[in-house]
Image 1: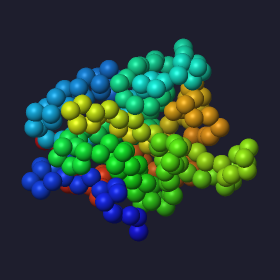
Image 2: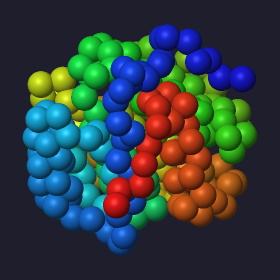
Image 3: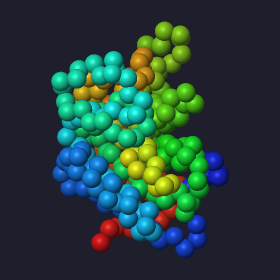
Image 4: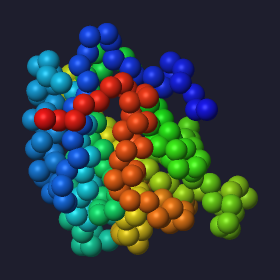
Length: 237
């Protein structure tokens, strides 16, 4: 069984209403996603219900607040969006599940590091439900999968690929942006950047690992994992 101790728990205080849960139809333009997040964060700051929004984007790159221009290897390949989230360059595109997580940490636990660890735990639990072992690394944000079938890294350690990225922002203790999990994106599209500024490692997906899963199935598992870590959700009416 996976850990359920306080280290990763971000359960709400008693009396907090369920988190609204929405799954977008079709591809969502990045500008529209940012506009929606800005609006929803303001609502939550004023006492409105928390919100999780699952989307897919058309192919694009985003630059976090720590992005290094040299890590944008192919600047003309896809649109590039500067964003206020933490982190460096990230790819989004079809076949990748992006979860925008808008929670009020004042209603939960005002601890940013614990929140990031909890998001990683959601991904790890989701992968575990499909018999994939996802792991966190102290020096690399995100979730990683060991690849024993690949050649070892130059230092002799086992090769690892990144399967999920995280990048968050807070405003008045309300979170936005979130995580992206590679279900079946075109992995070649990651070649236009140094993902998250980390070189020497690969990128993988569930399908690349030999799991021909549907996005809808991943969504069910992701929601169950989210509820284990963050509490009850409710379909948006």
